[in-house]
Amino acid sequence: MPQGKVVLITGGYDHTIRFWEVQSGSCYRTLQYPDSPINLLRVSPDKRWLAVCGNPHCRLYSNDQATSTHTHQFDGHSTNITGVVFSPDGTA
Image (tube, rainbow, N blue to C red; front, side):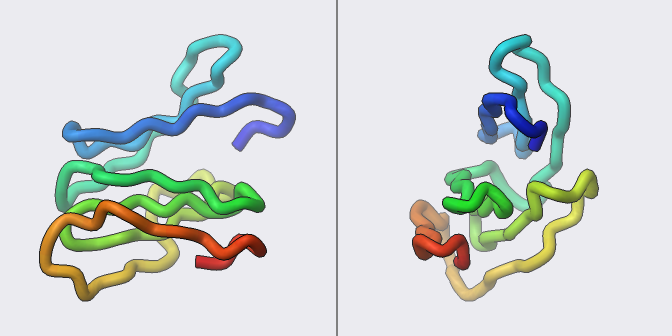
């Protein structure tokens, strides 16, 4: 994420995660979540991680990387994932 900037992250039924620079209104990064619509986005307290959840996966992306690949994938649900919480120290 841009240092010192206010960022909004959106995701939805179009399977696309968008990173917006709030002041300018410009989208500066997109990621595809190909498996399902996005049900949930959550940024870790330390702002290093982005959890993206759909059906039936939850994936963890690094906010420090310009890559579009996830670093971790959490499987085991059989339907939509609608909640995820990070611990206060930033771990999932």
